[in-house]
Image (tube, rainbow, N blue to C red; front, side):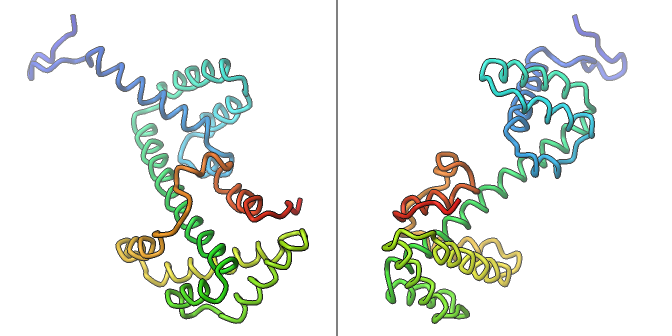
Length: 225
């Protein structure tokens, strides 16, 4: 039986159900860490010893062994102070939201790249209406060259360059809106009517880094490895 504080009458120990919930929460955190890339992992607030354990654990590839290793990692994490785990938990949630926002931004860029390349002047005019600071002639030239690359089955230099130009321009426009999240969300919604891929597709195309390569395959050319 659990003891009570003689002054307050409160239980001194947590109930089994509360401990189980905490253990499952830490296990979920361990699973997220196992799936976190090395660059992102280096930025997470955690003791160096724990970070080293995560890196070692990620080297295990077998599904069965990986599950056991995740459980072992969670056990090691439960030895950390609550403050360490609370800080890490908050950072992981923040990272997840940032990743979703970045994915949404990349889909916006990709939507407009295809619209400008395949839609010609009509697609370009729609983009200029939303981003009047864009260089119309530069985008028209890149779109024309991208089409020529596709027809000649050449490496997609212009196709990738137009993505880079659009990404920088749209990021600058969002930054110009400041920290007004509602304004940025409104801009996303205004452009979302014909976006042909959702955020949930990210995992299927190999993450954010795979988005551009995935779209080039869709474009009909070959990869420029």
